[in-house]
Length: 333
Image 1: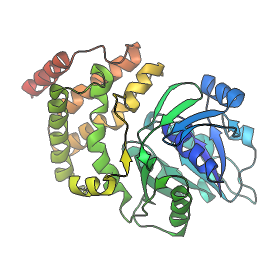
Image 2 (image 1 turned 90 degrees about the horizontal axis):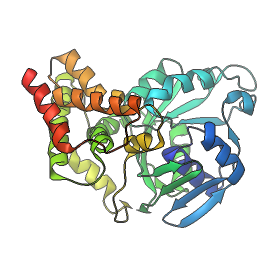
Image 3 (image 1 turned 135 degrees about the horizontal axis):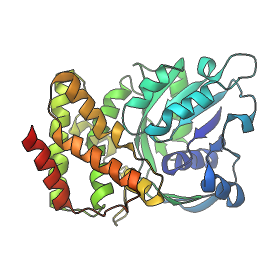
Image 4 (image 1 turned 180 degrees about the horizontal axis):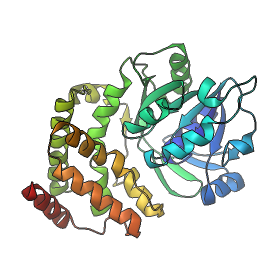
């Protein structure tokens, strides 16, 4: 099986690099300065095992790769806001022997949030979800670090529509050889909805900085309470805190130090977009559909988008000011 990593950033490059170390065939898909650096200097990936340079094929789109192979697997690791463009571009690519990627090949959605699976299911016949527990950092072109130990990450995998199959088991086996735990589960979206709760804090990190602060924790808890109420109203199941803690316990320990999450990193790199519409915005959507007020998540989504659109530096807002905005939104009802 050849793995085509569509979006070789923090998550994609780490998974791709580790798969390559274990002997899998990997192609990285990137763009701009990052693609140039990967081609010129290789993927410079640092894990708990130390730094390595991976010289892997790099393309910017399917046209450069040519006709796809029947044994290809598409690993979608772009941010959710870039998923439609990626799915459309790669879904139309022709596969040797006839048909398109959307008709014949599996696509694995390894992203925060729960929207990419829905988008993929509109286009692809074979869609898998991956719940990603993989802290990684991507701040400069060609350079990625993922320092957790003893495992690099945990990647629950299953069919996006529910259930599992032999292909999921085969991919999980490849990931397990590559420094990950990859449980094959019948209810992968249940795990992804649970992870979404923690990702509601990405906007707080992006706007006020990644340094820990009790006021940041308090604001996150308010956002999570709204989300739990929305999940309950929508009858959406999600893995419990105890299940998640048991799944991670002692497996993905990070070295000490403050690190910015994926949204903070997007602002740091000046990408011009952020994933808040598919994190906090998912809760806002559910709230509006099911009659649940979500003023805190509305505020966080709005603030993060302003930072991205206006190119504001990550962490430029105080938590006091952000909390005040949430309080005002809550008071307006």
